[in-house]
Image (cartoon, rainbow, N blue to C red):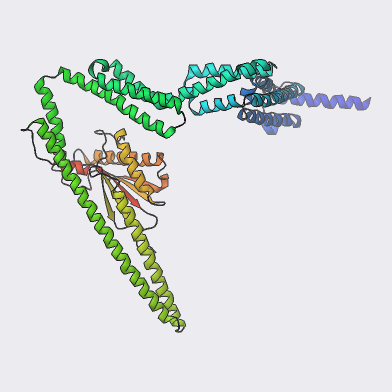
Length: 515
């Protein structure tokens, strides 16, 4: 009897201690918890990890009913631990939650066996961005949940009967999502053009944009995974859509202009091109003659490009001759080395020096050949109006003449993407290079503003290269020089235009001349 009383007293003291420790709305610090409560808290944490793994295994989707019951019991256990509920009730709730979760796992196995194609179609729809189609997505998800709920209720016939319908619904949802991701922007622009009056002001351009969109839509329907061709078509669709919108706006403006105002506007456009090409002012000639004057100037520039190509070919020939001469020098060193082979230890050291010189010469020649080969290739990436490519010692400099920013801003416009993709291609020619982006401005405005703006523009190009995974952040530096390093006179529009530039300086990890 004494033993029973002692046991009752010990249990009472333990319960009193436990209830005192859990009396507040939150758990006490671990140091103040009793041993039984510590074990319970550990069990709660372990089961919380189990619930997270269950979510990762999609049990909340494949067995939503049982998973919800497991969650509800688990929440009761956690709430009880916070409020100081009896330990047995907390443990009962954890046990119930674990049992429900076990049922969810068994149900999920059945769901995976019965619905493998539906589950895969659902996954593909998710990858395509179906969740963005909120209304349609919610509707199909509801159909899927009804399939898994039917399995939980042992209504297998319902699941078998409706699985193919849900699979088809996810397939259709995936196709809608792909079309939305691929063609959504172009459709939006076409819709805006229609609102702006394209039917009246640019009917031909609008019809072309609509027709191309329709063809792309049909192509995607038949080839939903042809990603490369879809992106190509999407780019063309957006181009045509923007063209229809721009022509609509321009036609509206022209409608309000008098005949002479229209002619003066067109003359100004042609004159700006003429000025940029440094061609003869032909405003006293017809528009056709002015256009011909521009075309002749372009032809002259193309001829200059051919001349530059010929110079490059000459440079390559010189490099080949240099290689022959260097090979002859290497052969001479080999002969000298052979002559020293039978000499004393002192001569052996001389032989080692000659061997090192031979190796260094061969490496230098190879480094120079590879660098010049890349230099010649990279020069051909860019048009005359896009960039100039130079060598400066062991560095390659790409001067981006065609890089244009909106006035007073450092925003990279879409029309610069092609030029920057060529810069990426040029940088990728080298293994693990370091790159410096230099921003330069003309002398217009204050030095402080020019310095800040040129730094912001250099930072914008740097961020673009990092975002597109051209270089890691620690391999690229952006510097803004303002107007401090002009390449032309700031007294003329042409000179100022030349001074507003971005220079990309590439330093290869293996430099010509290194051994």
